[in-house]
Length: 102
Image (cartoon, rainbow, N blue to C red; front, side, top):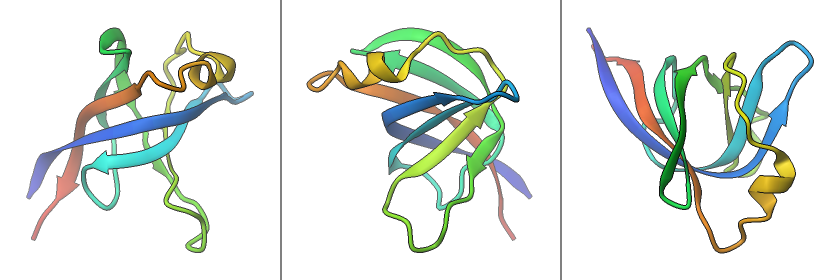
């Protein structure tokens, strides 16, 4: 059975890859152990900046820190410099992810 699971990520950095993906890296504040495809909203200082489909979570080494990464094929107008210029302002991804249960 597939259900939806909410998640919220505090974004620490954003990367725009040559294959067209945008990757958000940060700490997942609430949500499942693994985030899969779904829809999310980008919030900057509490204001909605964009809504888009996510491709899901990218895998890191099991020894990595608690940073996690979520990718999208959507062109998101947000730079790494902009994210880092918000030391006291939250850049948040909030959305729904499909999860499988037995």
